[in-house]
Image (cartoon, rainbow, N blue to C red):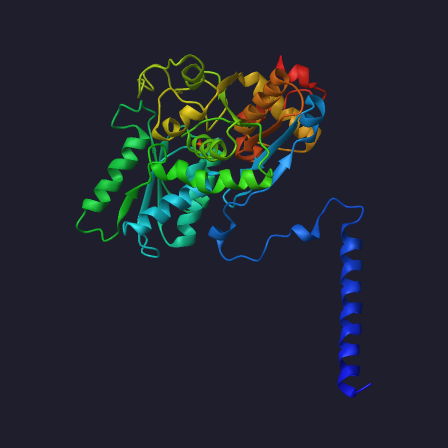
Length: 390
Ligand code: PMP
């Protein structure tokens, strides 16, 4: 054998041995364990690169008891902890495209929100060189205020007021954006994010969340279930799925006190801007945060024609489901995820076994410790699924 053939032979033998060692290590690491080395995400850069591509997980307890396959899209695994990261980033990118936000210039993003969207904007503002200015009701839970404060957002707490009142926090956010833009002594630019009405919201779910679910489910989805806050998620995902799977059903999971379920099932909700806030402090009388509304938003309207049915879920059912999932599956989720799971079980019972059902788990229970989970934690760990639905 010539010396170059010997060289080739030894190179081949060494690479074979190296491969065997790697295979053995992977086998040892993964055998007998649920942890898959092969599914590691690739290296990435910066907080924005961590948004989206969230996992989809089967909820084993619910699948087993219903005979369906029930899955949750884990939006809570976005870097700022909710699906709103996608929307906040998409809104920022759209304003940058229009030249209304300039990265690194400390330009101001204004939003009126007491929920997850403010947290997403605060995180992204830090990463991209902006200021997040969040207007919110002055009785917002202390843990949320503290989180926003820790993130360095400018906070403007105002007295709770109906949406028709110029002093309502969303209206104030809009006005502040105008004031900063008009101030000749302020060289920053300012934009009003407007998550409820901007077209960017549902479209980002149409171009990312929907395709991810479709791909992760190998195109096999019988039912998609979600609540509606702005309506962006349900509109975007349902539109994408219906285009590809005409038989897919979309179900709205709606908390008590919200008018959306009646709108879907009976075509009646009060008027657009149905005098929100004219009667009581909280428009939608529920412990569930982030979903339910008594007015129609642009984003909800973009998906309304896709919604086949609405299921109304009581606070009691949501609280018990949250506890049930925590004890039986190890999932510590927020109130809107719990509502979705109640609707998933009701759908499973109504249409029978064999369906593939996908819900969204929008945020973690940690965001709801002082209110929803304070009560949920008091329920028995021995609840049965039938007791949850009572
Ligand atoms: N769950 C939680 C916890 C939320 O904050 C939101 C958004 N408000 C939703 C669900 C509903 O999402 P969307 O606004 O896309 O309807």
